[in-house]
Length: 396
Image (cartoon, rainbow, N blue to C red; front, side, top):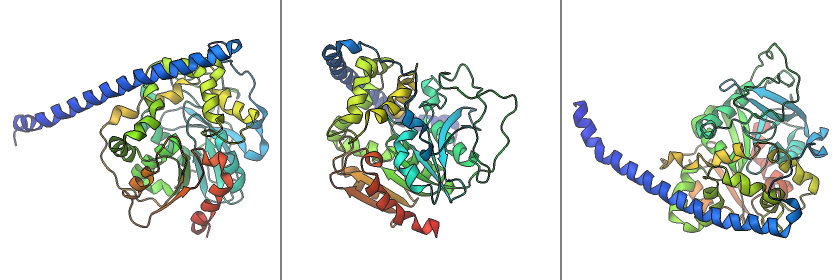
């Protein structure tokens, strides 16, 4: 068929898609402006109630002691093959079994997996990574450096780059000055790159919140690298998109996502009154993490308080709507899904929507009574009770 005819036939569909995307972006930015007004009032209230804290976040110069707890594992860096960026990770139990890779959410870091690092290191090589933009990992400044494709490539590089037989070690402290923040570079530079290490051929992915969103996508596009998944409190992007369009209540629960679409303003609002909005998110008596100590709270705020520490994590959200609309995808990786009955950010109905996309017999889903969003930290014992039986055949 002549190219001109094909172009003419596709023109209505392309025009419709462009109009749909334009309409979607108009809604997103309208919602972003409303969210900015609401969160601006909240941030201003915090400043007026606590005037001594001022309008900016206090930079933390010394990391809290809990980030150096030796029982959690050894701190290392891995240079990614695809991008050349360095990711920080904590590793324990190397040589004790299969690789178990933990992916955290927002506003967290590797430390959110402290209970799981202790629990599973006796039978697995457990690795909790700081995703790009977080903690001591490299933090590109450009929004385009946080697309889903690049983030999935990071996970692939981590799995293939972690040595199965060679002990982990710090990588050289040489980073591209235009791409990264340098506040966290504490290792000595070296003129020689680290020797190549044998990587793993597959792993067990354990993920929460944003890390879980990445894990869902990764299991679809890199199925051979994922043996099992344990997912907490997050749905695949296509499922979330379809469900939200049919259930407006989910949009209200996710109102913060619209605020994060704006440039620079979210960073400012989140840092006002010494990061009070983040503090409230993590410590609220109903929606936060129960029994979070001041020292543990500082473990999360330390990274965000560094220059540019919020921009990388917020750039994840700034890429969320760039792939609209998404095609439905079939899910086949054997998966344990844990969902809090009282999760304030995601409705329970998403669990059924996720189940409808799965190959029969591949999903084990549990809605946990009385639990909220932060299950790996708020209810680690209950989470472990579900994980051990789910992983038993892997160990056998």
